Length: 285
Length: 110
Image (cartoon, rainbow over all chains, first blue to last red; front, side, top):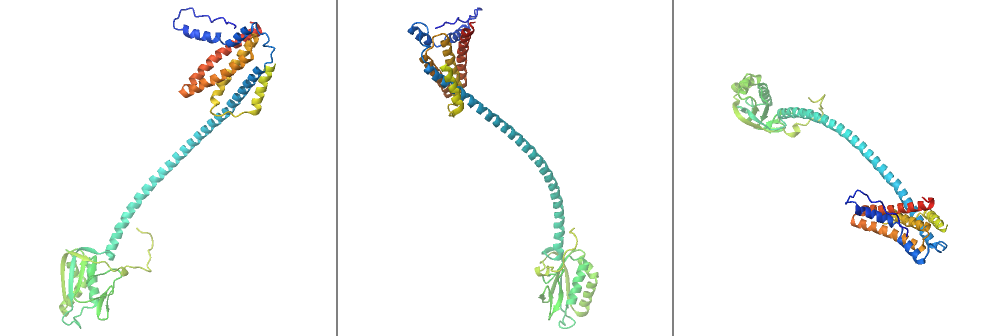
């Protein structure tokens, strides 16, 4: 075997390096397979015949080398574009996602603004709704759609002794009485627990007076909710009050009026609250 | 001549056939190539030194390739694959360099 001149050892006497230097020295000194030398020595004389022998085995090994080289090169080359492609795909995906994010952020801003606007609207609607509810409550109270309770007066009226003639209370008498109560400030009126609504009529049908199509029998109990302090006094001054004063004094009709702390009046029957032809005109308040 | 012909045939065959390498073997191809190159340069140097021998060349070629791949495979199993392949490449690289240096001296007599 051909001996290679050993590496020059460092002369500075560094005690830490020699072992690694020896390793490198050994690697480069034995870079040629020792078997070449041994075989050649056994054969005696350098290269006698070995170069002339057809080197088929070596050629086969070199075929293997060529194969290895091309296969590896092809493998590396085909892997390269794939990597680059994957990378550019990822980069594109990143850009796409970034665009998505900014688009979504924009949309979120828009939606937030919309939410703010809608909240303002909702507050407005809430205020409007409260006002509507208030006016609806008032409307239901004064139209008789709901039972009401409150202070007021109770009037008990009955026919006089001549109950078939001049001493009888007529529908007109009751109309005058109720008108007087309205005039005196009554907010709800009922006759014998028949609440008067805006469609209620007091009229004679046959021999009886009817309210909301219900026949009444004397004595008539008229309840009215209003200011208990003034209702009675004011009523006496109205034409209705005057008329009934006359009835009482001239025809013996009984009339008693008391102030009551709490009265409960029923609602108007549902069929007396329907409107079939009247429709609303203009906007609600 | 026949040796160079073999190399050319191998290259051409690789290009023409384009064999599919299984994924499990793929990481060991580069190391195998370096080992094969080492054996080949060693053989060339021996040829120039006039001590070339077919059998020695083939045996060193095969054992180089197989042992290098095995070492890296073992390293992969132990979790030090990249370090071990670096070590193998360093050692084989030094051998290739010194062999090529010897070949250069033969050819240019310097």
